[in-house]
Image (cartoon, rainbow, N blue to C red; front, side):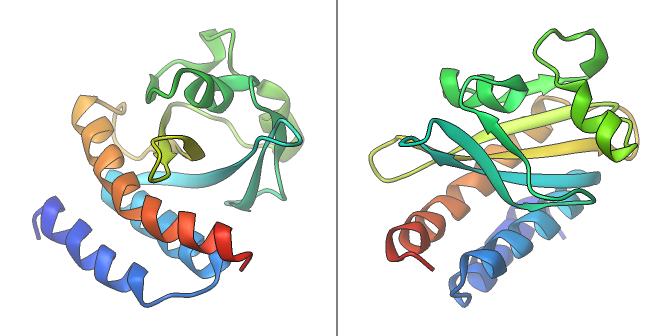
Length: 161
């Protein structure tokens, strides 16, 4: 199945879900499958408390970081996807999360999730592509996926589910 058809099918499934946890679970599963990644975290922006937090994070409990922290924070601050294939060499990388969990991050890809006003309301982060490094095609596909997610996530966050 072509990736664009896979994403369109995912969009149909997404629209049938109601709770934010269900949506995030489906997004995570689909993103990992689409990009052949090991883990996915979806960070929600909390402008009031100046935090990014995960409601869903593979293999580790809830993660809470400041809006300008790490590669995810940089994605939020710059409103721009990030591709980091040597995270331990990147000064933005937060190795303490790996230390706490025992996980070893080999590569990272992130993309912002925008609301209807083009404000960043979340960030999708994928870790450890199964074969090789993340590339520009992966960035395009993840951004396309984030566009499908944005409307549903915005509606759910507004309704408080």
